[in-house]
Image 1: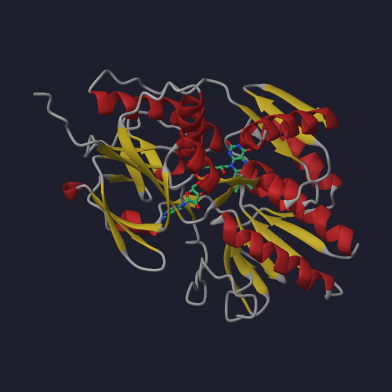
Image 2: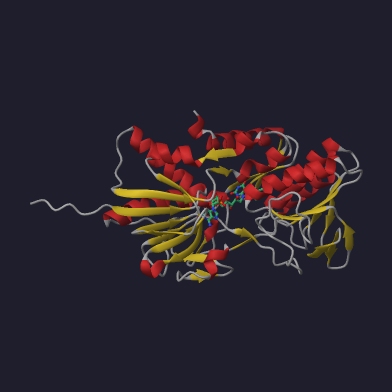
Length: 393
Ligand SMILES: Cc1cc2nc3c(=O)[nH]c(=O)nc-3n(C[C@H](O)[C@H](O)[C@H](O)COP(=O)(O)OP(=O)(O)OC[C@H]3O[C@@H](n4cnc5c(N)ncnc54)[C@H](O)[C@@H]3O)c2cc1C
């Protein structure tokens, strides 16, 4: 007599770049009727839509509408034959193969295999007094101590906060916005913000507070091109570290600046749930994974993108690695379920990075080769749209 084994449960937590790729793949396999995965698949995500970070500065600068930069995760799940669960992950108990989530109520989910792609939080440790800071604040009438300090992540909250900034700027004579951060995201944000605020009122001003190591991962030529673009936009650069914000004043190492609001793009730190998990954690709260994107402590748990850190080599936290690492991870999830051989993710030695400069202009870097111009912005737009519009056709 044939014995039927119960189907395994594959739980996908978070709708980051990697899981979007996985859902698209499952959806394509379903259309072609080549579905090879014999498991019940569930996806847990905080929101039914996810915002694509690569196009966020373009939205701020007015080049895109919100729907242009959003991916409809819920519909993608339906097409992929995946159950969508709108909840937020709060605990992973890997010893008992369980996760706890919150939303309208606390829930528990069992899994056979878990894949984590929940991204990371903004590192707000620079802010001396975090008492009044609430990263998930979205109520525009709530204005206590640090309401005007806005973290770039989660993006869904930032979207609401940015619209409040524009509203406040519209009713101010001189609105002073500071962006804190020294990476590519901070640079794109500062130029996008300057274009948006200048469109409202010529006397509004945006300042970049970046410490001493602006774009430290990029070559000198690229950094020089970026500084020229910041100058072109009339952006003030303060090469000091920000330390606190209160009563409308931003403290840096040696200065006290009158600032109406602050946007923090100050790097990433592990999400709160990583503090209480039994998974092995590395550095500032990232799930420790091997070259197969597999947890080093629990082989049936995989993690990819900003939530994870490779233990064998340095791989930067970026959308590019989430997409490419995610494609390998998806193969490995299938292989793990079938008990077959897994692959390793080998990042390419050169990555194309395209940085938008607020108006329709961009700078690119590919290893030591640098590019710039309006055509680079159009190239970026083409690549971004190709990523986001796959499901819209
Ligand atoms: C303005 C800006 C521009 C950028 N531009 C680029 C670029 O051009 N190229 C590049 O390579 N990188 C870029 N980055 C970096 C890039 O955004 C991140 O590295 C990338 O988003 C990480 O992808 P991810 O797949 O790990 O997760 P994310 O894209 O962060 O997605 C995580 C998802 O999980 C969900 N989630 C989070 N927590 C939970 C939870 N507890 N429970 C359930 N769901 C949860 C979130 O809502 C989100 O949908 C940029 C970043 C910013 C801020």
